[in-house]
Amino acid sequence: MPRRAGRRVQRRRITMPSTHKSAKTVTARERLKQAQQAEALRAKRRRAITIGVSVVAAVAVIAGGATLAVNASKDSDSGSSTVAIPANTSGPDNTVIVYGKADAPHTLAVYEDFRCPVCESFETAAGPTVKELADQGQYKIEYHLAAFLDNNLGGKGSKTALAAAGAALNEGVDKFKQFHDVLYANQPAESEDGFGDVNHILELADQVPGLKTEAFTKAVTEGTYKGWANKVATAFNKSGVSGTPTVKLDGQTLNVIGQNGKALTGEQFGALVKQTIGG
Image 1 (cartoon, one colour):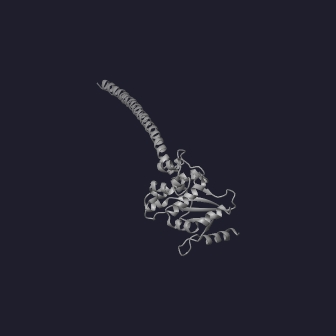
Image 2: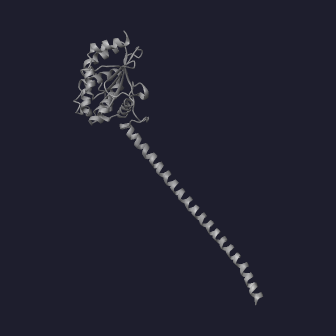
Image 3: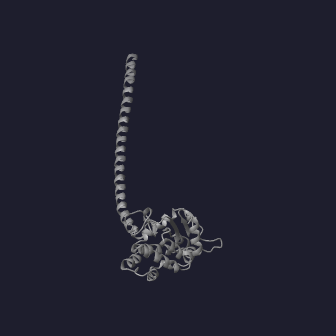
């Protein structure tokens, strides 16, 4: 009996480790299989997500491209090639309008907003002299136009007038300058958005001989140069100039509005120019 019992005990000692090792083996295999299945499932999900994202991205690109093309042609400030640029533009990104002789020895930079009443007072008081000195070749004028008063006052007059000015520029720099002067001579009250009405803009264009061509009328009516107007307004916002009118002669700011709040007369402006350039 003791010898048999001893053999049984020995069998148990041999059998138990073998059974324990098999359980480990099965468990390891199961875990490996489960891990492989889980990884396969994750890979499948990743592929599904990737395909889904790719499809959405492709749709977004197509839809976005179509939207961009439509928006850019209507009212975009992006650098997209779909933005219509009028002829006779100058400067960075075609946002500057130059009037005068290209070889003039000096440059007068004028920063204005068509809805700005202080700009109107400056143009009314000194505008003819500003033009005369440019015509004489003393300097060329660089116009940097803004549209921030639309945001400050509401409406769209500044930008609509600016887009129409682009249509005038497309007809010629002289036509732009004449239309520019007509807009200031007929500026509505600051609280009104008279320039936001394209029909009113077209009525004012009648005051510029030869301006109201079929192309000009179409451009104003359809807002052809709204995208360009946005670009011009954005360039002004990035210029560092904080108010209008701002006038700089060869980079030096001229105080064209006196301490009494009144704009310089033409005679005063001419004297200031002469003093600045040392002539």
